Length: 423
Image (cartoon, rainbow, N blue to C red):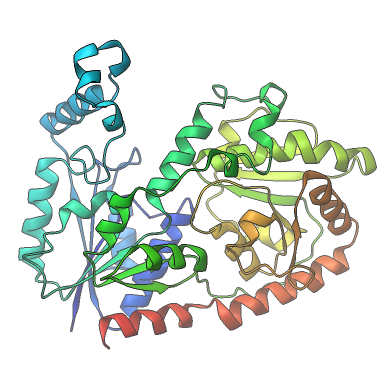
């Protein structure tokens, strides 16, 4: 039996946001292909610490072994010193300014701030211990764990999930404009809620990211757009487009409940909520005061509730919400990667209304299995249309589930993985 060593930076069980679900889908695909799977992770990567219940839950259904790196006090001191260096205001230090260190304010993707020394040694020992045929990494931040020269005989795959450096720059730009939580939509500047907010910034991918991808046998992109960008800027890695996949869920949807907006722990979802609450919701409620949106997940703790919105926090099992939801809203226009929430909702027979930026990286086809908007006014029109027409919700929702079954099921993932790992 072939062995796969899969590194994930966060604890993916129970899954709380899109990246977790992507990790588990990939693991399920490798398991279907007959791999013995060792999952590697570290408490140094995430605020959500590993626990015995999570490790046992993964071993029951998903993986054969779980190995977690536990950072030491010295590791945390090391990271603190590095962060202090990057946080320096060089403009006030003439000597450093003359040495042209201004461009080093942002830590590099391969910085030891992400992979502390004990973590690098731990991963090396784990590779020696498990002798994997495949090393499967997630995100370029943790590439320094991989000794490409020493492990050339091992198939190495990088799962990008998103364009990391571009995503980070977008995140930092947005962070500067958001008030401290809980955020009242009325307190957010209009410029932050314009659909072209990020386009105007003209941010780019750090060339280092492409150099990292070029060290891998294969690089997986979750959207076709990003696959094309990576392919254009690399020369050695083979780029493979594998969108988010999900097994379709057969259920008796009744399309009688609130609209739904599941959110993960990132600023783009918060921005999407603020956009909807300030720019879309007023148009909707003027014409239909009965409208209700249920927001789940991390965003619930970051914003002030407004009339017509129910903030529900983290919901461990979304099945009942999908069964009653009339439709999903995806008012997100920031970030890279793919809106996993859209694929998941469609797999449950729930149609989505999305802004074009998010829809372009999703299976949504306008008027076929969902609706796409170019402006807040158009978004409001689509919302009102679906809110008043459960039959249209059922029609589009049925088509959405069929789209996932035909083109975005796990079969597609397994076929793509099988070509990379030669099984």
